Length: 270
Image (cartoon, rainbow, N blue to C red):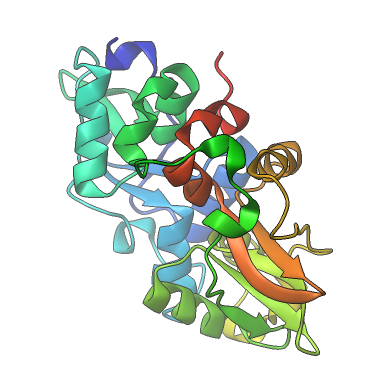
């Protein structure tokens, strides 16, 4: 299978001098998590919602920042005739989830982890190497969840949350009210609800942008139930509560690392 068979096309692009506010708006309207940035009409970099969280919110910058100031560059690319396995290996080696596809120096598509797992789920192990000796059918949520969860009070400024997310290398934080889990904030929430609306992260509280009420699950629930709940609600992280106390969080990554056969729950084939 070749890259051209799984890539998305056409690709949304933005000029390097466009503001991050406009880019985040276009990402939201298009329902995408990244945009290829051009210079003189040629692909020069890429910006993701996580870039916006780390390089705008965490740095207390405003939405009028030009996208060239936060884009990842030089651009890592691949050709449309390359094997899909080569794309997998390149993304895994570089720690990236999206790979622009160039042919004769022209942007013809973009291939993402989602593209590959949707159309070639047999490559799941390239991104989520499974642990050996695991019987997936016997696993419960408590067996695979991450036990240490970063939390923030609902009154915490968004810039403080983004700083903590950058330091810990995570993409979401559980928000508490009176010490109890009340919502969740992701890097995408920041891009859509703060940067897109040209607000200052230091002036916005977590409770203003968190997703609430919180969708949760218990530690003794079958892993299959967690998969179904996340897929149904189109979420990638699920806080785990036991006796109303936060005991952990389970993500798509947690599940696919321990039980990769569940890939089709999140990326059903086309």
